[in-house]
Image 1 (cartoon, rainbow over the protein chains, first blue to last red):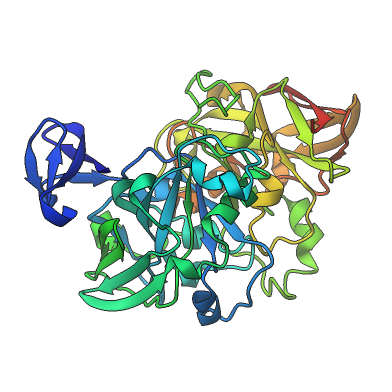
Image 2 (cartoon, each protein chain N blue to C red):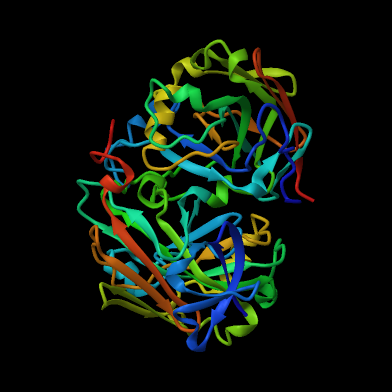
Length: 261
Length: 226
């Protein structure tokens, strides 16, 4: 099942795709059928700990001139960075390189503590698309990628749908695509993950207990390019839908410059 | 959440369960690394606040036992001033920053000692139970000056460190202004303002007591992992 959390008519609702393909229309649990742009899309589940992977596709690691790792590059994100489908993400004035990252998000459904690889997938509730923005101008070599580059308000987009694990036949063979203003700019496949989903669950749960709602953003393949205010970024993953986001400038947020300090 | 052992209903505001820490914001911590800052892999001193998360699996209350992993002889127990947000803080100014603070508490930021701060430290800092905090939220009005607080750390009753917030590089208000420029803090979020170096080392079997006159006493025993 695919389901979303949307706001409409003064309340929050669970919604499911209406009509073929899951694009365009959605049906609220109360029966109302609406167009995609009539509702406010929230991240499709209540996220707990947000765990992200850096450099987890060999091609992207090479693109950024990194050698492959012995150990996953893991970092954490806070709740304020999360954003739903069709939201707007701010690009600060004065920066030279801000890019999207289309990623498969793996949502934990069951407490996972010291779980072995063979059992790891039993702890997965479902999947969604993530677009994990980075502002490279702010990257520093201290706990890199540092939060100023990767944990900005509204810079981690999740959705549109939470897709039950049983509906995804092979999460290790899903194509990811990103389009900027309709042009294909990024393409990869989850079969090329350096550290695959069972490994990541085994690794993470060896030192931190994962709980239902915790989410693992598994990393992005090559093909990240700079995006500017006005650009529409669409991230697609086979079977999970398409996640839309628009870049906006500081003015929309009542900011005049890139920093008051 | 069952995982989170700290009570979330403490006065005057509940905690949200989101806890951030700040690296290198105490003069002693900065000085300890100053000689390496212009060398690889860092190449330059930090410009913006360097933050990390203590996720919900790390949160613990006073009285909880901190498990020392079998492969690790000693842990670091770093006392920090925890700033508890009371009002949504987005792009706030230094002058108004304290208006957004509900109160303060002690954060015992537990880590596996690690010499390298180039990559995020999740494996070292985000283990279950590695963030006792408390013993309660002390309302801001009851803390005369958050930038002149001493938190004393005792290991088995012996005073091993006195961390003064007077030595923070960014004051409480300054830190809030710089952090909220890029990430909004919500009511109940905690921002730990920075630890002193060297952090006290603790072995299994020892008890850590952190106390500050205004904030109370946070006591946790460290024990070998089962």
